[in-house]
Image (cartoon, rainbow, N blue to C red; front, side, top):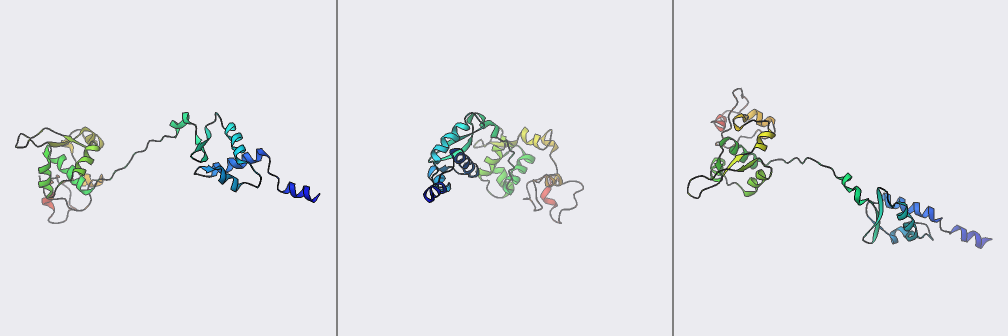
Length: 214
């Protein structure tokens, strides 16, 4: 009797119960789980490989499947339903100060060349800054200047105007409106940018008026 009791004490759970155990482990684990890992977690005498076979059959044709990933096993969305998992998000991209200044110069002085932008800012314009604005489709290449070297010019796009609710570049906002839109902070801009100063804009510090002259 003692031998039978000892044998029943270490008897493996029914295969249906083993299947439930494997299901629970795979469901709760983000990474694929190997058969060896399943074996280590389950009670003595269990056969996780056989339990996996039954579990895979149970999930055939369902929204999720038990699939092999490398040396492990995991739940994965059925391939034909993958499109349901896609989600479109809007990525907010914060412009650097250099990009803001460059955009402002182009918007208020278009068409202008890279050399003119650099002259107004007083520093070189990096290719990355121009590329970022081009990638956002807020600026585009304009006509080449009929001057030595035929430099290309830059102008703002309809995408830029549409983003800010403008009909044309003539409707560009003044300082307060730009700051309200988050395009300007409270630091002064380089003197040549030439953003028109609002008539009622009295919050500028003394000596900064010339920063926004026409």
